[in-house]
Amino acid sequence: MSEPVQQRSALPEPKQQRPGLVERLRSLFGIGGPSVREGIEDALDDTATNSEFTPQERVILKNVLGLHDVRVVDVMVPRADIIAVGMETSLAEVLAVFRTAGHSRLPVYGETLDDPRGMVHIRDFVDYLARRAEASVGRRPVRPIAPPQEESALRDAQLTRVAGFAGLDLGQTVAQAGIVRSVLFAPPSMPALDLLVRMQATHTHMALVIDEYGGTDGIVSIEDVVEMIVGDIEDEHDIDESPQIEALSDGSFVADARIDLESASRLVGADLAMFTEGEDVETLGGLVGALAGRVPVRGEIIEVGETLELEVLDADPRRLKRIRILRRRPAASPSAATGPTEASRGSEERASPNRADDATPEA
Image (tube, rainbow, N blue to C red; front, side, top):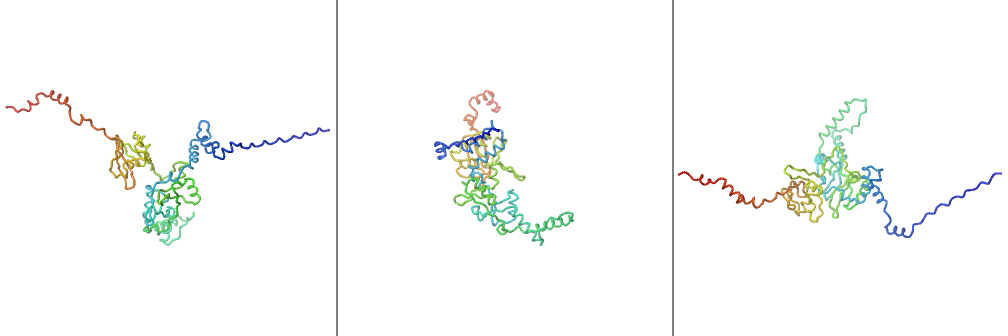
């Protein structure tokens, strides 16, 4: 006779504790414990116990977390540095601007920069020139010739295209070419992350920053926003355009007006920020403008305290470009300014007692 099988009773599932009154009140008024964002930031800052992330990964993750505080005004290229072309600009001038600026997109304006019309992309520009060159020689677009056909036929086709470019008329304007694309418009206070989402959704990689009066404040590309996360992105044609400062042999410095006051102060050995007189100034050019109360002209010298002088080397009516930092020479002492002292004159007289006799002619 088999023994009865004892059935095991299922263990009762533990009941989930409901949050207490205090916790619910804290959650209601938003005064709960640390948020997930704060927890991640604390974990990234704790480098002693956290070895799962490399230093580069920590920097990128911190930049991602901090992107919600970045505004468009923080990443835009200021108006003074915008390189743009007009609707009535000839294609020859546009070609020259593309060549010197090194950009793939150029803003297009009407009468002034405050009348933006869109942008011209270098791919649209080159495609337009290629189509006009092909039409000028009466040929359809040449397609690649697959081997093993004669290479001479391919060479002839390339020469035909070159002949078409040689006879191309670049006197047409941007408006006549019809190669202007639309751009996005964003206010300076717009979160940079929101602008990035809009750029992705509209497939438009350029936005003009418009102020409350409809004027153009600056320009933002999708690369500017991405660089806030991963750092500077430079390609083969980029040159170092960061503000520079150079020490000269005479002890003075020649600096880009855009250099920040902290870097300039560190190299010069003087705290330039203390002379801002309470104004919101971040660059050396801003300091010169704040002290002068206007945009100084080339050659003008601005005194900074009792030891420094700032000389404007290059400027235009809108902004400063290069500034020379000089140390003021100490004023000469009164004794040096009045000539030799009585003691020195007395010693000279004792050294040559017969000076008067020597000057007397013989009888």
